[in-house]
Image 1: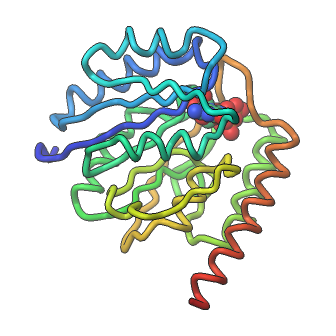
Image 2 (image 1 turned 135 degrees about the vertical axis):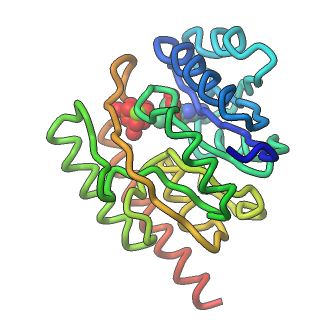
Image 3 (image 1 turned 90 degrees about the vertical axis):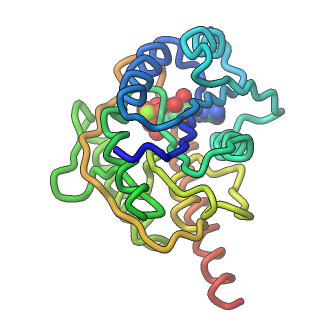
Amino acid sequence: MPENIFLSLLIPTLNEEENIVGLLERVMGVLDNSGVTYEVVVIDDASVDRTPFLAENALGIKGKVIRRRAVKRSLSLSVLDGINISGAEYIIVIDADGSHPPELLPAMIRYLAAGYELVVPSRYVQGGGVKNFPFTRRLISKFACGVGRAVTRIKDNTSGFFGIKKSCLEGIILSPQGFKIGLEVFVKARYRSFIEIPYIFENRKKGESKLKGLVVLQYFLQVLGLIGYNLTKNAG
Ligand SMILES: Nc1nc2c(ncn2[C@@H]2O[C@H](COP(=O)(O)OP(=O)(O)OP(=O)(O)O)[C@@H](O)[C@H]2O)c(=O)[nH]1
Ligand SMILES: [Mg+2]
């Protein structure tokens, strides 16, 4: 494992008190054994439960919690806050609900260190898949990723699990409406190489799902916005 790597691991949270401590313990266990220098940044969007408090306790000196107090919650802007305060060369973003296995972090770091500027764990490349994911969610996910292919070559483009060289993000403007932060980054960031690596996504076991009807509608608006973005970029 490369040792001269400095990594910021960003974890956006909203009411994840049932998941955050277990996830942080897994994350820190994996990263402590990996030999990289790292900080964990939890970006909490005014959770109404004990998430930020539990995260601070679990992290100790290994990271920090940003407590957002914005008028409107925003997953994209939360991740952007994390990127902005990070001093690291590499960023990895991971969900707090346990759907994304932290055990994949060393492989992601190895690919970043080998020169891939974007690394995306993927359900939709050979060897990848989902576990305990209801049939309707599977369909929605596949359909949404298919739609996302209109704006990016990344197959698992609705995921919030990715690693990127921070310099590829300089100057990019993320949409505050974008719930699918990965898609925003896959379309807007300036990376010269990427790789998707297979993994098994596991449906959240605890805590409330935020996937409501409105989110699906927002997603289609987000894709339309990104089609417009690509057209303007290509024309300019
Ligand atoms: N900071 C911040 N984090 C959020 C917000 N909404 C969701 N999150 C976090 O972002 C990650 C992804 O959200 P999820 O609710 O898991 O979204 P999902 O995976 O599409 O759907 P479910 O797992 O079914 O809920 C989790 O770590 C959430 O706690 C938000 O508005 N602000
Ligand atoms: Mg989830």
